[in-house]
Length: 215
Image (cartoon, rainbow, N blue to C red):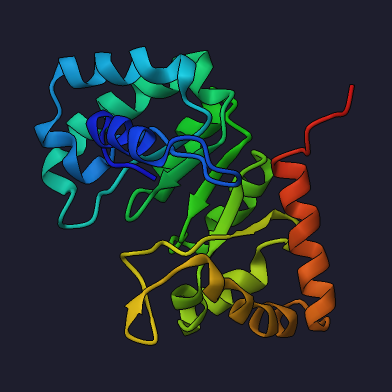
């Protein structure tokens, strides 16, 4: 994930081409107040080369509320471009879950992932009906509220994330090797064993990111 077009370009240059690593073009909502029309134009110019969009979305928590109008303008401009809504999207929705789901539904963005969803349980059905997905990290599953939400999310709409370096595991930033620790927790929620949870997650990933077809 990246938080602005400049960071995306830097990541793309530094990472180069690596198997299994895809930089995502982002405009984080908490930085909306500092984004200029030129920043948005730069984002849209980079779209044709971007394999993934994120992190974008809305944040109406106390930290994001002052920039609400700027966030809506940027989010709506991105979703109005059909090139963006056709790509995988990682979506921030803290405190703005209803507005976020409404706009994703209007844009027909069914390859959108609601990252670390913490909104009202009553909106989950709307999100599922709109074809949206949910990503889960180890820190999230340690929360009693998140566990209750996960019981309402269909297992075939769940993907994994680290949200590193913003989440920590054993005192250090989370990394992909920490994700297997989620298996017993998800298996318990889904009334299956760890193999069943692993198979479900693998199947979900194949649906969300279909493997390349052989000519």
